[in-house]
Image (cartoon, rainbow, N blue to C red; front, side):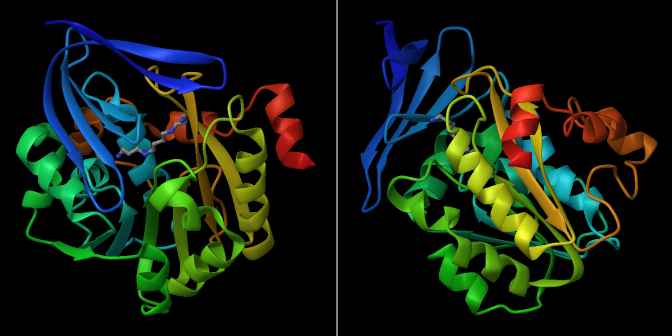
Length: 278
Ligand code: SPM
């Protein structure tokens, strides 16, 4: 039976037509739901918030993985993903043979389990032998790993529930400490339409800590407002243009990320540019 499922945001919503619910779990941390949709493949929701659809998850995951990868001051060898339990960022990092290890610290083991069972095209990221899974609190994990990583990607939910600590200044300072010199971060920075204050705040934290930091926009039709940000920051010479490029083989595999999109994603509409300059 078909059922319209909505993510509701103060007076309006984004609605997807589904035909079958594959997973409906209340974990210690959140409500995990996976649906088969009528037109968009699978849909993952956490606490009623859309996390991904098969239709457009490549856009978000490619950008979250590759913006920091190519903003890093040297060729990255050690990567850390915080959150990202569905495995999509892992899948994209796995395309880079230069990476020797890919750690993931996800707080909710049930998300990993559900993704591996029902979202195989995304969770295939876990099949890479370089991936090591750590179940726990990402903010604690980075405190315990100073100077360890070349790139850190924070693929969090919204700042309510388990994602909340990942939007604080202390956490950003911890990310910087967990990086090697010249390393780069890419963090889920919300939409400048939907949550301008949060987007502005995290970019401000990053600007205060790193030589270069900025908000890159990613077009994702199934996130409310159709746009979401990645805060990219590093002490490398530049984050706004890639310091290296995908080779021909990798570029053919990618559907969204290109060196031109890397540069272009930092070109923001006037009101958003003004928001981050304040
Ligand atoms: N790997 C995909 C996980 C998604 N992480 C980001 C989710 C952000 C969803 N919120 C968008 C804003 C509207 N609530």
